[in-house]
Amino acid sequence: METVEINGQIYVKKSSITQGPLSIIRTYSAGVHVGEVVGHDGTVVKLKNARRLWRWRGANTLNEISLSGVNRNEYTRISEIVSEITLTEAIEIIPVLEGVDLEPIWNK
Image (cartoon, rainbow, N blue to C red):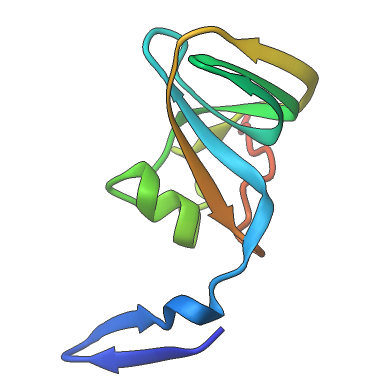
């Protein structure tokens, strides 16, 4: 991925961004989920290999999570993977940059 730093801020060249198989789905009432979109009809989104983003640190917005991931620390919670989920009130679908680590982390 091509980047440039300007005044301490790192920017990614748009043409070097590769969408991975994952997307972040923000819903109206069921929280934030990450998975592979296998169906989308209006506000209904079906995911496979899905996990819920319960809470996180290291990103201010879901857009930032899609580009850089989250801090993998004792605060961050990404649930275990379920094989399939249907979300009925999706309001955002954000493609995740290839290579961003959003694997489960659930400190017990």
